[in-house]
Amino acid sequence: MEQGKRLVYVCEGGDCSEKGSMELHGELKTMLAQQDPEGRNKLRRYPCFGGCEVGINVVVFPDRVFYSKVKKADLPEIVAHLCGDGAPVERLKGIVPKDVEQITWSLLDTGF
Image 1: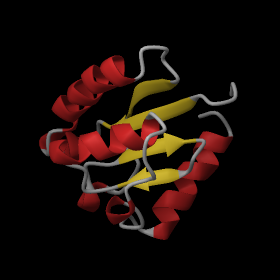
Image 2: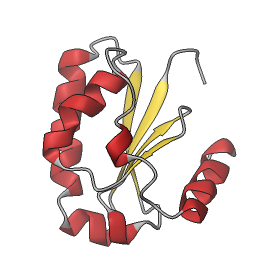
Image 3: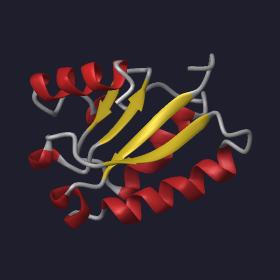
């Protein structure tokens, strides 16, 4: 992956979708278009991370940041992290079970 580029995945699995992940994806897309016009952060949907009970889940790669229980109100802080103005949002990290997080990194490391 090109230096400085990130992939940002929003879960679109059934549980996350029911919690509003599709709307959250749209809002994040709009915010990134405004704050990241050069497109350093590529926003994608992901079928399911397996952390359904703690969704909505958003993953930042290659940073290896796994955000859980994400709400629309959290997006300004996440965008600040993605656009270089802030640190990762600690209160949204470390919520998903560690094995789910590790499987996610293994899959993303292989390019899945």
